[in-house]
Length: 356
Image (cartoon, rainbow, N blue to C red; front, side, top):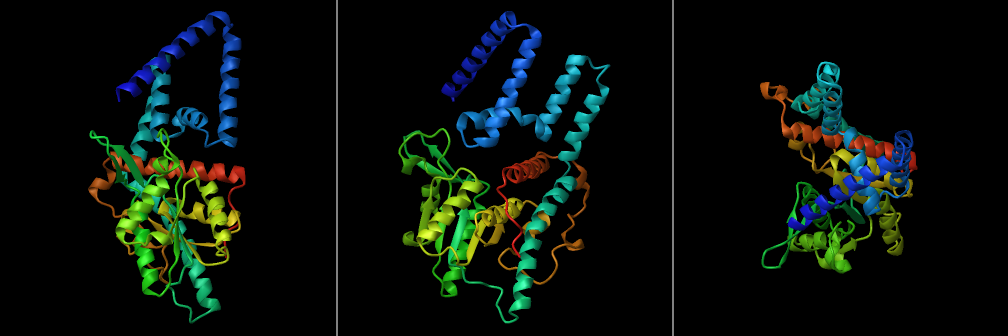
């Protein structure tokens, strides 16, 4: 912690010194142009090299104003610079953004619309199968289960020097993968589990030590999954590279035309389906880690013929539904960030056609 604080203070000091030197040497109008060119360069680099650590860090800083909290801070900073009397509209806009994005009713509506969209697409696929093969059971046998596990675990170094792996709020994906695997074994199948998760940022060590995929594989083994059925994929840093690496593994094992389950969060299930379709893989989404209150209470293991879109999935309206909360703000931010990522994937051409 002390080292990190020292690094931050040093970077701030260097930035302050460089800023003062540049403002004295470069005329103001050219300095503004230089700043604009730098911003444009960072955007271009982030577009084509999103996984580079330095570019990724710069983009997180520059894209912060696009989040609800970042937009509020930016508007309040502008109002303080212009004076409170002249900036009432900025302050009002900041308060409205904060109020709306942190209201549980709004966050539930947003996240459920994203999650229901993912589930209803899978429902349409299941109904199409039923129309073509009326006797086909809903519980299907899988040849491979792909776990998109980035961020489902955290590695910690204890005071005694021991390394410990902890589960995060996204760890439902690991438990859901184990549940699906056990269901498949009960059906007589023996699928492989491809654990796709790249190296941990800011960690040092050999490939095995910094790979989150290996840590997740150990957790699955502790849950009872045979080690020989787990295939770690430790190279991908985003969903697009995961799809490419998974396709390579499936081709090596002759399973590229088999039935493939993909386990990920409900909020990005649709993007995962379209991303895998872009590399030529037709997958069956197995969403979990639902953020919507009604969806979280619904059984996740099967897809029924009942419509997902309906009054039963409207968020429950109570008095506390209108009381702002940090949890609601977090969910709204996740939905907004997923929307921005979808736009990025569309611009990069990383999404394919909707299967079926």
